[in-house]
Amino acid sequence: MPRPLILVTNDDGMFAPGIKALVEVCKELGEVVVVAPNSPQSGQGHAITITEPLRLHKVDVFEGIEAYECSGTPVDCVKLAKNVLFKDRQIDICVSGINHGSNASINIIYSGTMSAAMEASLEGIDSIGFSLLDFSFEADFKPAQHYAKLLIKSVLENKLQKCKLLSVNIPKLPLEEIKGFKVCKQGNGTWVEDFKVSTDPRGEKYYWLSGEFIPNEGETNTDLSALKDGYISIVPSWHDLTKVDALESLKYLENGG
Amino acid sequence: MPRPLILVTNDDGMFAPGIKALVEVCKELGEVVVVAPNSPQSGQGHAITITEPLRLHKVDVFEGIEAYECSGTPVDCVKLAKNVLFKDRQIDICVSGINHGSNASINIIYSGTMSAAMEASLEGIDSIGFSLLDFSFEADFKPAQHYAKLLIKSVLENKLQKCKLLSVNIPKLPLEEIKGFKVCKQGNGTWVEDFKVSTDPRGEKYYWLSGEFIPNEGETNTDLSALKDGYISIVPSWHDLTKVDALESLKYLENGG
Image (cartoon, rainbow over all chains, first blue to last red; front, side, top):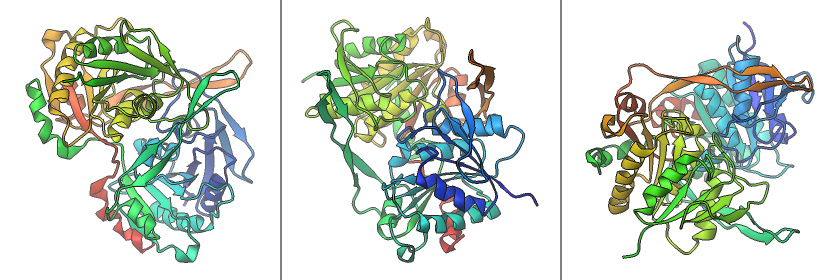
């Protein structure tokens, strides 16, 4: 049996410790190809590049691993991998990350890591986005690697059936304190934002986004509650934004509002 | 009673005919403030700017209307409007568009127009994203304006209850051929992509995204089917990507996969 083809990508760029950690895990599970942005792309959401050309360059970053840097967004990376590099060969799984910082709750919407994984899922590829709740460059990825390996192996063996995309967040805890996986819903919370206002050397005013994420209190069985309880959250996710329970209540609009 | 405060934004930038069409409609319904990107931002999805400062400049583009151009993404525009310009005043509704081109089906994911509206909905503001199925700069926005006015007026009067975000797509048809509004789900389809490969003047290879959207056949009560039948589609939308019906089937992962 041929080894499965594993596409690794991220949004922090080729030199982030998180992608190195993920490549190390995947090397033990299959044939790895990396396609990642040539610059950090945090917060890029599902952005794609349509008004300018994209570049794709082979690089030698991970020992013995085929790797390409791409001039575009995380989603562009996946599109190029699927439609240029592997036009004629099936990608068995796409893994994205390991992101430095949480993508739980509404943060999935802003996340380049998760958007790359979602793009692969739209192409019919089983996909997992991994995020570690630790922004530090010196973050310890070992516990995340242990569980990422378990999960990727399981998905390669069992395939994802009712859902092509898993959003995985890993608490910042030592291995022995992590209680395992919890399959759960996306939690709710709010960003309380506060733009830092300042003046540049030319005397022009500027604004710099800053803020604090406030989780909703009292929710259970969500990624936020699972992480708080010491679990790794797995949220089965997809691209359908319909708020189904609101369909009926809006029918009055069909009569002209 | 004070006139409602209407925030207008888009992803095509301040000089797109679509935003002018939307401003004309909103002027008749309330006090209008425009905050839009200073360059076209199609396909920016839910991108935000976190690694560099943002600029916000007052501009005189629409007669008698307060307007600001922003150096960032559509989502940045909404964040700045909410947290800088209107920190102490309630925005009654945010309308985004009118986009040049469809945001039906999975295109909502890539859309800067819809991401701007979603950002406002996350801030608790009733929001509507409008898209016209016509890419032309000379597109006729009159039928879209007629229906946008009906809908914005209704939402201002009734408020959105179970859902803060409406994704509205308008077929490219003369007014008399549009059959009205249809409240429906997000449809399914696939982008069949084909990167144009070429070589730049320096001899370097580049890739340019191109492709065709193929709607799934046989779906009913979706935005795609409504548009095909001559209706304006209204999809109640939100930020929760959980694929709820897959939760149970993935429980086995909690036992280590």
